[in-house]
Image: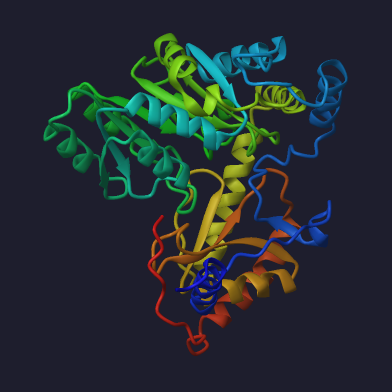
Amino acid sequence: MTGPLDRLRAAAAEREAAGLRRTLRPRTPDHDGLLDLASNDYLGLSRDERLVEAAVRATREWGAGSTGSRLVTGSTRLHAELEDRLAAFTGAARALVFSSGYLANLAAVAALGRGGLIVSDAGNHASIVDACRLSRSRVVVTPHGDAEAVDKALAERAEEHALVVTDAVFSVDGDLAPLRALHEAAVRHGALLVVDEAHALGVVGDHGRGAVHAAGLAGCGDIVRTVTLSKSLGSQGGAVLGAPEVIGTLVDTGRSFIFDTGLAPACAGAAMAALDILESSADLPGRARRRARELAALARELGLETTEPAAAVVPVVLGSPRLALSAGTLCAELGVRVGCFRPPSVPRGRSCLRLTARADLRSDDLAVVRGALTAVAELTMLPELGDVAELRVDR
């Protein structure tokens, strides 16, 4: 009989051979002196003095923690104010704040989809995948961005109710979901549409109000949005935006809301400061999008595979995990920190670097990126890096 730790060591060795081991690398406050193109700080607000001071004020007034779950002592007037601000900013009827965007997705999809059919895009974030599993509902995974496949799955269902769930901007490919077509399919078949705006809020649309707002769908009661406060807003936490009936259902039945400690006051204060900045800085989201397009154009110019970004995410597809790891290390050696995405974060054969644009990138920063991507392009010309067959990893 194999011991439990022996089994874990053997599995780790297999992941190592396939280039799928993960390593924690604690960084310094200045990202180890590297140009940061790996974080989700799309607007460069995480260290903005206005956010820092708002977090300090909230901490001094309310304390370091929220002290309990939202249904006990973890709901403060600060949380209620943040919920009102988020709803008003995005054009939603109501908002409900969670301690992370991941938990917001778990609650929205699992609670609203339970007992029905859930139709999920193949490119959806892992938090949506986990939420689908948690719902214990029948799940149909449709090809990426295929609204016709969604319509077909809804038309053929036997379940009484259904839920369609999609990222707004996909977290790796950086493209935009066909929200209008998805909403039309949902309306035809009496389904609820859930849209994860994690990578769209703060970057897409007027003042960064998100992709649903930009599509003219913000007032639709049959659309539910989830957002994170930890990307463009430079803070931490998440929220669900929707009709009063939706929010009431999550308060009553959303397990990741009921049984989790409320968001820390500092995060709520910082998020509201970020909303103040977005409301007064019309061009800030546009600057992030322009920088993303410049990064994508640079990658294409060097012969690297990428996509046309809808927001701030720019993938550089390399194929194998080992090549992606080597390319990420090479970029760091040349002064640029980038994300390195391998299975299960991406499908097999689609390992990539992920560059995330920021509104505060300068022209001389782009020159540094050019040097790093030039070296990556040269690396792809070398013989294969001894990659072995990729493990099948369940996303």
